[in-house]
Length: 369
Image 1 (cartoon, rainbow, N blue to C red):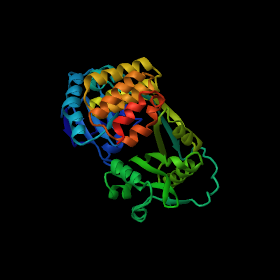
Image 2 (image 1 turned 45 degrees about the vertical axis):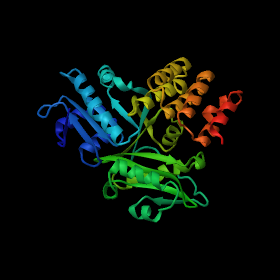
Image 3 (image 1 turned 90 degrees about the vertical axis):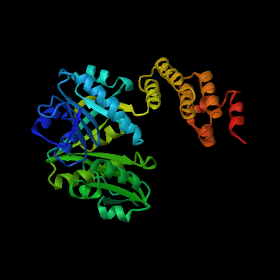
């Protein structure tokens, strides 16, 4: 695959295959940062795009060398680049017709599939009535001036990261982005920032401090950002979230968003040990398959038998899966190989099943002075 700086009409046609991901068009229009790779300069049939929201794969999966080109790019460029930069995980989106080719191309990181939802609202949509003010809470527009003023406020770093990831820098955000938040006692309790912009369409996200959830603050914050969007020339606003994020879905629906489509997203992790572990946790928590989870944990143990951090995470996984003997085995080995985060060991809720076992005394003796 060849990286290209060109943003041709052909690329717009190719990425119409992932049109529900507005971030792709936003990158092609030059509004949001991103990178594009194509299979050939003159007449591309396959394209890969890295957007602030994830990786988009589009084009003709039956074209010559599509699978081989994808695997080479993934193994020789994408994974090494992510590991070198210290990145954690990634999201990948593609049309279902790419499924077989993607399985081949991403074979070393068997993609973890999960259901997602795309919701939309436009200027003509019916919206909820305004909610009454909240005593002690102040709403603020997230402007460069506010960001300077709010240095030292709790959660300001989350907004900083959001703006840097999605807009690249504060100047681009000032020109093309917008956001709103609520503040209480120098705590930014809820914040919503636009993710991307394409023509008169945008997408937004929402976060709320866990201590302030279920009070209607997120709903109020989203209403503020929607008012701003529709008053400033935006015709349509999108919302993307995992289907299992019920709080996000409820907030979207309460503020007037309607389901546009359900689709499958895929996640993976640059570090292979981490990827296998997450596969196990995915089987355990989402698929409710304890046996499949244990298979992944045992595979990880075979591949990384002397990594103390991996062994500690494996102990958590085995404990959650009810495999107590394997949990103690992994935890003891992790400690003996150098894992000494006493507070984490003693308070990790995932290890709670082990603490009533007589063998827990031995664990305590290994970590306590």
